[in-house]
Length: 243
Image 1 (cartoon, helix red, strand yellow):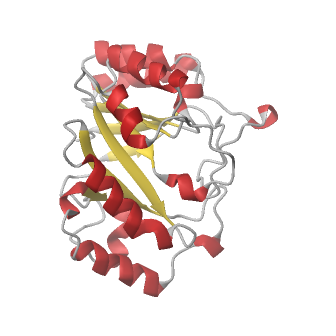
Image 2 (cartoon, rainbow, N blue to C red; image 1 turned 120 degrees about the vertical axis):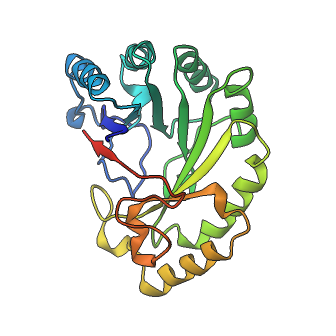
């Protein structure tokens, strides 16, 4: 049974992540977005076939003008909603996240890709301070994700260790999704991992004390870590499709 669908609302984004698989951009001449009425129809049809969660991605989904209406619709239909996001940690973003949670947003999955960007970060909060404010007084959940490429590989162990150490006792924190780089969109083949790097990641994961806080998706099956092609690293069936 299909439990989750992912909808890429827009490729609009203020960031410039060089591993981005969506070719996200801030160039107004290259912006592509889904029509609101089409997304509205997809969500309603998803409800009729028993989908439990709608995931909104981008680009940066916060830059889709009618995101709040889609979150509210999903909640009113009795489904969960998640956004994959990497907005700058500013007061404006804080207010947007909290407003979406008030409308029914269930989960925020935030990128840890700071090391993969070359633009100036205008965030005014660090991760802990920011997300403590975002999740104060509500029951929404936070996840992180980290894309492992040749460029980010050297920082992987420190990012995972420090992030889990900081957030593991926060009631709102779930897991870090470890994403294997796929040469698609902005990403190129030179950023792919070597066999030696893949084996090192496998050994690190198998010996990591807090591996229950790491989620692996099916692209890591090459490592032979308890996954099957349709099972995620935490043992849950990953029955999802992308729009």
